[in-house]
Image 1 (tube, rainbow, N blue to C red):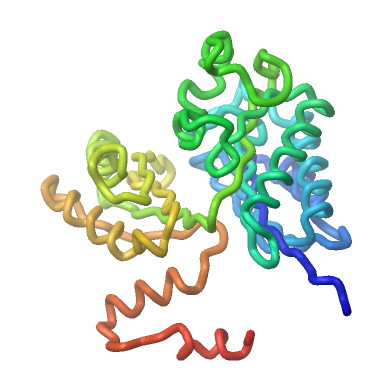
Image 2 (tube, rainbow, N blue to C red):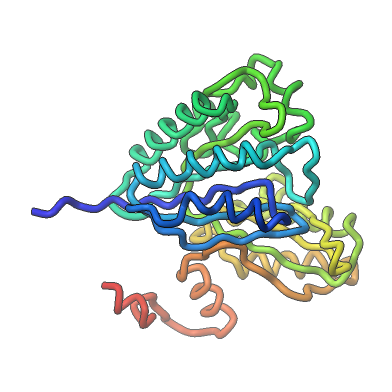
Length: 301
């Protein structure tokens, strides 16, 4: 019998969204590798962030990720980095997502192997988060990243915030990195017809779970200076339980009190088909619809 192929996804986020030469050098380790497929990479100048999506065999993906993080450690200096997105590392976060024939436990083991090698090879402090967290305080990425690069040295001086791997001090230019395991996440943003960041922050606070909003939604206000507008930037951490259309409708409801309208949306990186189908079914009012009715679903069977 042929060996069952294991497939894992990894979506490393790098703190560089403006310098095209640096971006290409960071992405190159994912190209031309056996067992690794580069699906997508997107940069955002306002966020000053690069999101890479790769899939492949666990060991091959791990090696490519470690190589790319080495490049980012050399090229990115957070002491001069500015952007709208919170960040604590040159490679800020490395989530592994089980896709096919990979259990959560296997993904956690791979995440820990990756973290250990990163800490030893590049002297990076590594925090484990989400399903790979070693204590409940670190499950939420926002808790781990709080204080960002500028406040990380002071934070790590506290015994409860010693890194899970690596030196107990922040890397002088590359900061610290979070490595974890999670289910597919949808980065879903709603643009507002105003340049008032205070309004965006108030809306984000009411939409996100920690502020009393949607259970599987993280949100923050972001200023898009070049466009003269603001944005509600959201991470939908479980689209099967908190649908995209619910987040969109709640943003519109909250925006209405300020006389502001949604003027567009965007999705960063890749998105599961089911998340979009679910939203389409809601807005179109399709009755008794099933994913089995999607052509691509039947083709891939």
